[in-house]
Image (cartoon, rainbow, N blue to C red; front, side):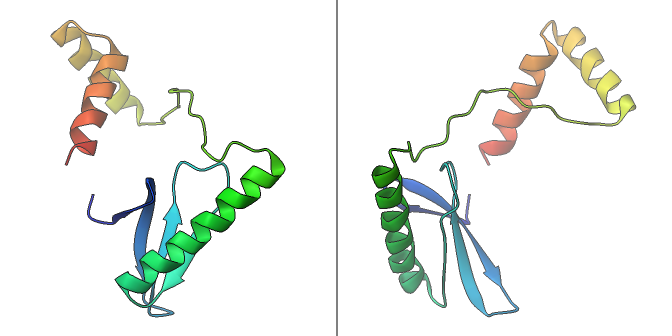
Amino acid sequence: MNNVMMINGYRAIIQYDPEIEMFRGEFTGLNGGADFYADSVCALRKEGEISLRVFLDTCREMGIDPVRAYSGKFQVRVPESMHKQAVDAAKARGISLNLLMTTALENELST
C-alpha cells in the first residue's frame, strides 16, 4: 500500500488534507488513537515517532496493552443478489463461502 508508513514497527496510514495543506498520519492496530500531522514526509516521520512514543508511554503507565486484538470475525452487508452469487460461486468451486471471501480479501490486499 502506497499510503502506509512504518514507524518503529507500527503501521500508520498517511493521507493528505488539502484544507489544512498537511499530511495526516494515523496508527492502525492500536488500542487507542494516535495521530500526527506535518507538512513534509520527513517532518511527518518525526511527528509520528513522537506521537507513538507518547501513546506507548501512556499505555505502559496505565497497564494497557497498546496493540489491539482482532477476533478474525466481522460481518459484511452486501446486496441479496451478490450474496446469492457468492454462495453459488463457492459451491461451484467446492469451497465454503468463508474461504471464497478470504481468498477475495487476500487478492485485494496483496495489491
